[in-house]
Length: 122
Image (tube, rainbow, N blue to C red; front, top):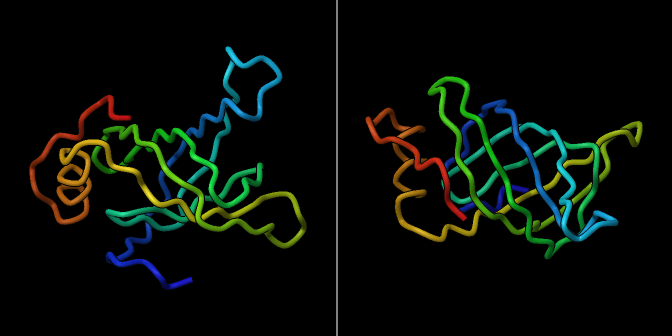
């Protein structure tokens, strides 16, 4: 599980996952509340009630409590497993950065630089 190319930060941040593939109505995406266990510039380990197969692309909104900011980014599920008891799953998500500002914003968040996180990135 230590295959990340970037340093991990143990942070529990609230996450909202959107997946249009799980909904019965294609116009109404499913929204799942979750949280990060750890996060890096390139991805995150997320705990949620739903499991997702590897290869699934999700739209993720991460709320950074310490900074009071949110990051909206797409991510690809790289692995998924059920937790003990079967009530929750953990997923490993690799971020699909569409613009360089998202990378800069995450670096700023983790290393204390004064960079504002863009409010809408996909």
